[in-house]
Length: 280
Image 1 (cartoon, helix red, strand yellow):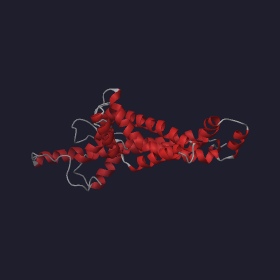
Image 2 (tube, rainbow, N blue to C red):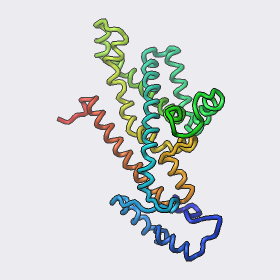
Image 3 (cartoon, rainbow, N blue to C red):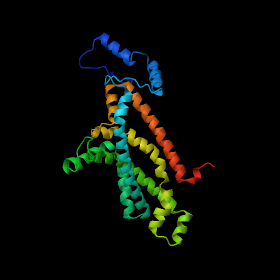
Image 4 (cartoon, rainbow, N blue to C red):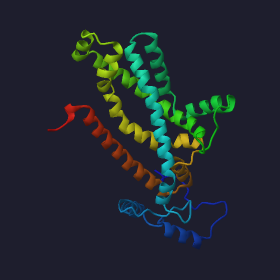
């Protein structure tokens, strides 16, 4: 797709001499055919021989990942923590108080959260909490207070899905025979919900965590751009604007590995929580 867009990483306001441009194209591999460029980039990434990038001379795409991926990981984990801390209690409360105001309000808010993308939530939170109330900084990545709005923006979107999944999973489990037996024994509602139903009720959430964790890390480029967070996602956006093919391919390759690893970890956790999935 990036090859189909006009422009190249060597475009500049000042016209580059043809000889210099030819040398640049040759060095970065842009003078070869499209198929040759693809095969060469694929081979270099499989062998972890990351190519140099034209937008930042002297650095390879691997250097950009090493320097900035830690920030994206931190933002993604903070966002997922916020999503879990908001979504799971809201889903449990909604299932516990089914068809009451404690069910309608969290589910209505979760539907709103699903409908509002991060590029809408982020500016609203920045306007209210940073510019008007002045509780947090507007942008940057320095102290802990700079992490609140980006993490909350990223987490609110996923907390809406987690709340609805938790509610659905809990309602399904609360209708099973062993839950009715627990109630018949005289156990309190809190004991039934948290001791017996919660483990099975959050299974849909566990299944969702694989793509969600990969999503909050790989999909954080919007939040990083809004709040000026120096993460990998922001460089991915800048690479697209600069038509820097090497950095784009490396970032996509890295995110693909991340998604695979996250899903494998979630499968292992599911087997641990649900003995029925184990192979004897």
